[in-house]
Amino acid sequence: MPDRPLPAPTPTSQPFWDGLRRRQLLLQYSPSTRRWVYYPRGLAPGTLADDLEWREAAGTGTVYTFTVARRPTAPAWEGASPQLIAVVELDEGPKVTTELVDIDPDAIRIGLRVQAVFEDVPGRDVTLLKFAPLR
Image (cartoon, rainbow, N blue to C red; front, side):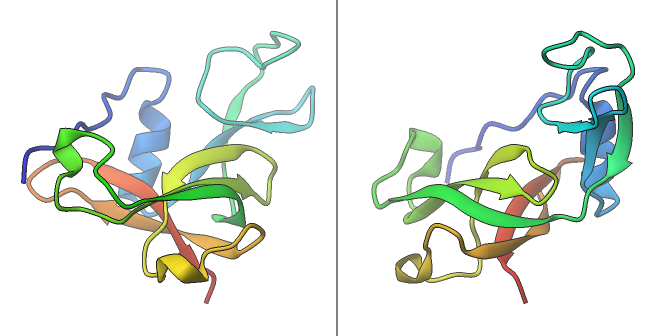
């Protein structure tokens, strides 16, 4: 199986990736807008407030939309089908594009409650965020 592309943390996103390594889902929060923010950025969306701070999120949410890719989405995913690609709406509000694990493709539905799963990449100092059905 070919190597799959991996994230390249930036100074702005490094706390997110460090949190995943510690089995924590850290998101930015803007006190002035009282909103959670994902993806990591330097200023709050909409207002450009510079008050973003890192907070731990619950790691639970619902499947907002999904697709079951029965053919590889790119050469690096050859042999990894079906690939269960989803957008999860976190309980805090932001939506995260992710992969679902530990579920039969036929059991996936919009509104399914899910929880964060932290997957270490063997031989790399990277942990990926995936989601599984809430237990």
